[in-house]
Amino acid sequence: MGRPRRLLIGAPSVGRPYNRMRNAHPVKLLLGEFTFDSDSRQVLRGSSSIHLSPKAFDLLRTLIDARPRVLTKAELHKRLWPDTFVSDANLASLVAEIREALADDARIPRFIRTAQRVGYAFCGPASEIGTNTASPVTPLCWLLKDGHRLPLSLGENVVGREGDGDIRIDSPTVSRRHARIVVSASGAMLDDLGSKNGTFLRGAPVSTPVPLSDGDEIRVGSVALLFRMASGTRTATWTEPTGAAP
Image 1 (cartoon, one colour):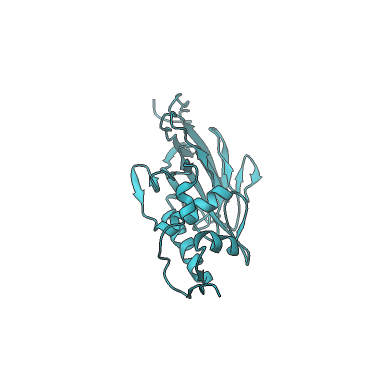
Image 2: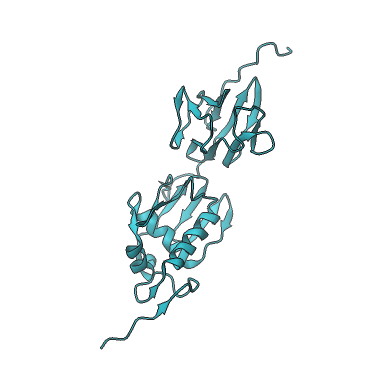
């Protein structure tokens, strides 16, 4: 008889990283505001390193390589723990670790999507960075509301009622966490956060993440916003608000 496999139930994810990962072709990708570097086994936000355990890094790499396909739990168990039987709790723990590191939300995922009772998939943006490619320049983005400029930061910007969001809009038609705009080196994305009165881009309702372009009209509830973006290669046109002092 062969050697029995060890059973781990609810045990922490320990052991050597998935060896096949070390032999895989190295990739360097932009994942929104994050940089994924398989060669150095790092996830960076700007110049800051984001901590991931070896197993969590291997899981992220596995999902990225298979994107956008859903990998079943059985496939992931086989790839991450080829010689050991572990419970699904170990896999769920790794997914939670990745989501926390990437500021992801299981209910409205930006990067890791759960296929209920099946497995997981990488659903976020991923663009390859060539070795001879200059470092991307993060675009300068802002919103205009009633002639007032509302700056957008790198990463996630939540639009919500006053006191509850990064972009605070005091209106009874705006939910506490109404929408979000994610700014990265590859551009900006708009998504609704399950708001009561909806988010609209150029008059169309937003139900999934959509890319933004300079000059786009956004409406959250009854509030109209204008999205502006300067890429760093050109200067965006500034329109003086009507009635402004000379």
